[in-house]
Image 1 (cartoon, rainbow, N blue to C red):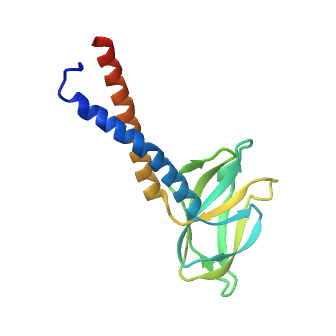
Image 2 (image 1 turned 180 degrees about the vertical axis):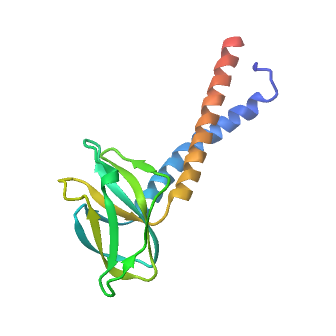
Image 3 (image 1 turned 90 degrees about the vertical axis):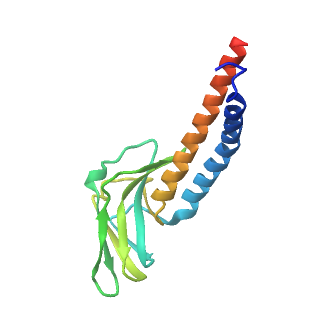
Amino acid sequence: MTTSSPGLPYLLLLGGAGALLLPLLIARLVRLIRASVVARLPLAAEQPLDLDAGRTQVFIEIPRRRGVRRRALVYRFVDRESGAEVPFAPTLVRSRIGGRRAVRLLEGSVRAPRACAATLFVDGAREAMDGCHVVFSRPVIGPMVLYIVGITLCGLAVIGAAVVALVGAIQG
């Protein structure tokens, strides 16, 4: 594409729009992830907690400096009032949310039929996992994927406009 191409101004405009939207989408993604956290508890074999009615995602948060055998952890939630087990579904698609200090790995979701005081039992947590936490979050995987797609498209628009402008400058 040369500088005389009729589509060049539109492509540059698209790249400029992408450059303006990119930091906005990144900031909103970070805000979405931070606002979704309901509770963050140290990883322990037994832990009391309050569950809200509905679905809550369960993550394990691991410091970047160490690894954990995730498959060795088995989660079980028991309603303290009735003694009934609260349904927990391990995830089929493992998602990962990374930060500077820690990585959150999706373990599954718990679906409480009503708000209740529960006890979380984690089989395999007794293996000295200092610094690890269990994080409870409202479901955000769907909106998170949409933000990531938007960030990717804006990034492609910026890179495409930069490449076309550079090629136009070299040719012209």
